[in-house]
Length: 92
Image 1 (cartoon, rainbow, N blue to C red):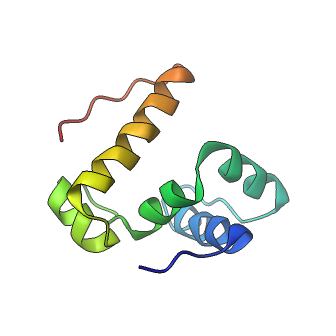
Image 2: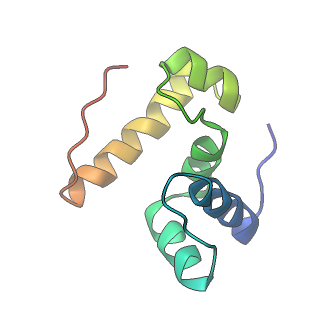
């Protein structure tokens, strides 16, 4: 599994987000927000995640991360969200 460098990974994450229902064109402000919210590894997982609800096995398959590492990454994202006052409950 290759890792994209810096701005490229956040640009690809911005493109994925822009493809959702609410359009979010990529610009320097969005880049700064994404870089603040996601590590490069977290961004890589989100880019590779299916658009629909998925279990850990499907996300693991689509992202290329093994279940154990993927759970660590997702748990880190959950902890960061809780620190910002955003609740998220997930069964893994």
